[in-house]
Amino acid sequence: MSTSEPSERTALESTVTGVAHCIDRKAWRELRELFADKVRTDYTSLFGGKTQEQPGDALIDSWRRLLAPIVTQHLLGPITLSIEGASATAHCHVRGYHFVKGAPGGDEWMVAGHYVMKLAKDSSAWRIRSLTLETFYQSGNLKLLEVAGGR
Image (cartoon, rainbow, N blue to C red; front, side, top):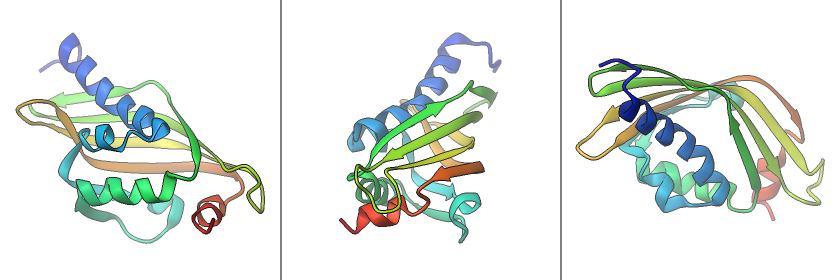
């Protein structure tokens, strides 16, 4: 399948950008629909630790608990796609802005990086089965997540 086939390209781009829109709107149910039943996430470039594999429900629930008290805005750069049958890989730049008014240490935290998403097509849609963040840099209050969770 060619990456130039409009319907497949549009569907994949919609899934990738849907992640940012759903997180920022706190649309957790819609966000869950974008992910496979099992999801591998790699945020080691940002937080250290290990790559995780967990059920999609658990991933979205952890994001909901972590991000509910935080105003976010995720901006994605151009999406490049590689499609092979029912599998695809998407690459795009990301800037994640996080804001908590009055947070000790500063109101804002920004993460700049690159996402690599691996997707699989099921009978109804493309679903993300793997998400890796390659962090370029971060600025602002690096403890904002920790501080916001304690409020």
